[in-house]
Figure 1: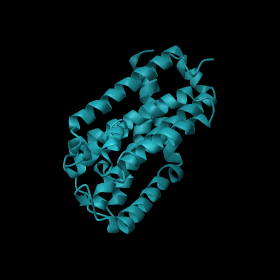
Figure 2: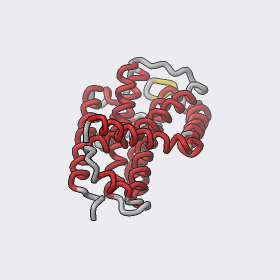
Figure 3: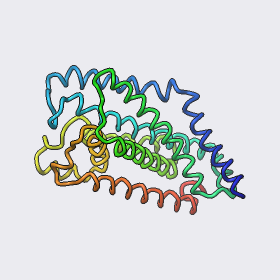
Length: 262
């Protein structure tokens, strides 16, 4: 397969993935906006007014970056895991794998589809947040890098989950029992400094903590990581390291046909 054919095939995968969630935008884009608006209303205005400050900031300011990242993470993951498993369940993915198209382009196509949905939902949620408080970004470069890299990471995670899932029930296990608890315990709604020392140490094992706090730092100029003795660079290295690790596992699994070929 020459470069032109590869480009056409790759572009087709990306277009199909984007068209898939845009075609049903009422189900894929509207619910996250409504959910986040309710979070802002309940946790930000109603409960937040009683809490006062969190981490040296107004509670609404503190919680907004975490809510934006939560939406990006959930939607990047959900888009890829549902789409790829649907292709695998219909056996149409096998036809794609036997083509001369390199596996890294197949993976990249699905990841970009997940990124597109995650970033679009993130933009919508950010716009919704402007109705509740005046959002100002301290470091745009860092903010964009953290959002995109986190979206890539969880798109890869969704792809890996779909590879090894054997039924539709399996694709809900990781989001429900692993990802969701890690998100809520990753400092979205509270400062890690409020926890006892032991639980602060335990929280450091949560990778989502670093992503949320790196993004919070890019928005507010401060995060819990500094108080725990970690620099923002260490969080960025961790995100990039996970991306490299999951990319390697996904490509190895595709090459071996793990979870696809019986």
